[in-house]
Length: 171
Image (cartoon, rainbow, N blue to C red; front, side, top):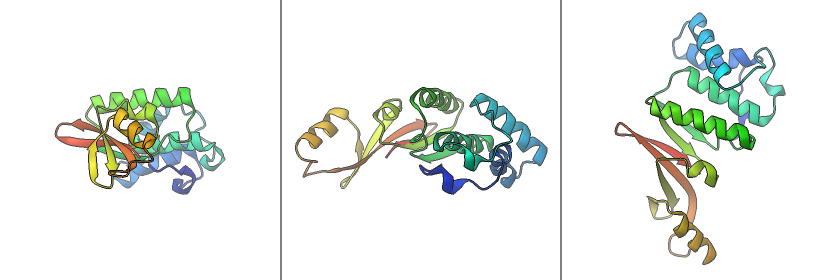
């Protein structure tokens, strides 16, 4: 899932879009649509017959998240996947994703949102020196010192380990 959802939409109906990934991975049409309906309901997607291109960018991101979850992944990689989602919906989706991680999903989540970053089990900061454990105080002091001459931050990455696998949340 990437931060610009419009470029990732492939169909002209939300329910087809959500079921497509599962079908492409071998699920029967019937099974894919049942899973898509279940995930769409869980994510609060009600515009199943609508063209996803007519939805707001935030709702498109939710549709793409639903499509990814419908395929029952073991690892999900997302880059700014909630960048266009409003605050209350973002909190609900992060809570749902936390449940999925509890059920065995490994989540790699790239974000620049401190709110999203602090929800991770483990966070890393991408710097010119490589990945370092993220600490808000260090990042803030580097920014205050003029973007940190020694190890300037490129972005933040949060990593959620699950059964020796790593999930990344950061950007």
